[in-house]
Image (tube, rainbow, N blue to C red; front, side):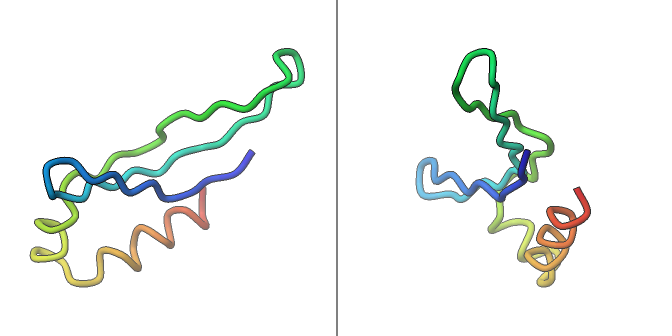
Length: 62
């Protein structure tokens, strides 16, 4: 089980989410689930310039 930051570009905008990767021995494969979404990174960076650092800290804590 591991956590990572997933950045998706849609219509020129970047959206961020923390995603948990899970391996299932029963299905013999991996899957993922979204733990938390942040929305539009451009708007978040304008409101809080340190948002990238805060997101990274949440990934480490998770």
